[in-house]
Length: 295
Ligand SMILES: Nc1nc2c(ncn2[C@@H]2O[C@H](COP(=O)(O)OP(=O)(O)OP(=O)(O)O)[C@@H](O)[C@H]2O)c(=O)[nH]1
Ligand SMILES: [Mg+2]
Image 1 (tube, rainbow, N blue to C red):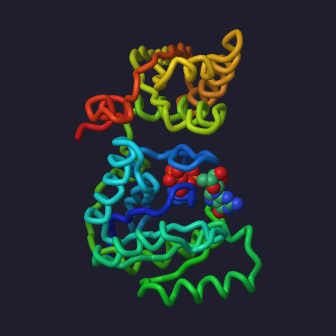
Image 2: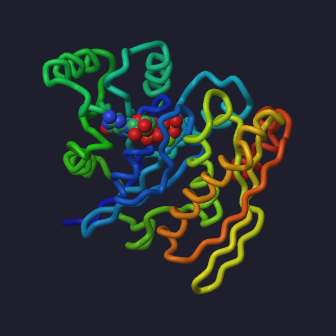
């Protein structure tokens, strides 16, 4: 059997479960996951390699109507993967009604000229009858290469999805070494872990206003010293992130430290600082610096 490889973009609306799915597909937590929309801001590559194939998955920011330059940048990053991919997974939350957001993405997919898999996610919250109906409704909307119902969270039907995509891999090159699971820099991974804990701790608009950058990193065989800067947009948000007597920041620090320790196997010393950068989400220079991409 010949070796097969290819690139697969995971696209869709915010909160559909794209990051949960990429983590499942590569069997490691490489992308942060929260219950709030617009969590992912960057394209994150995840690699799944076996004896006969290599699949390079691209997790993407949820496609939405942007209200800030940051949102516009995020959505453009998603569209960029349409071109870079051999196959597109259109991931939807099957429990949600079809709406204008879907219509908008479908129009873009029609112009992509790539095989599109419709991934109906979250079927753990679905009855069989409703599933049959939903699959039928979607099949009338677009000529999908495949329609595959899954639960990324409960690991239902993901193996079948992987098997189905193998027939669509066009290349025979091994792009990444066998043991490589992602292309992310350590700094980015640590910043994202901290941001994940902050998103869980915050409500309403604050998660969207937060950026995290690693300012200093010192590593030895057994220890990892990290100094991270948390950026918010307003003084009031700074107060919320710190919390009374610093208790929110302390809790976030503890949770992030534990995750980084289990990821690296090192003893982690984590220092967090908070700073206000007014309206950074509308400043392209700041967006590039604070969402860690050279564009
Ligand atoms: N019940 C159920 N929940 C799921 C499933 N997959 C994801 N979720 C939940 O849906 C929420 C959003 O998941 P994410 O993976 O962050 O979604 P996303 O598409 O990456 O979202 P953005 O990064 O904001 O675009 C989280 O609370 C997940 O736990 C699933 O199969 N079943
Ligand atoms: Mg995501």
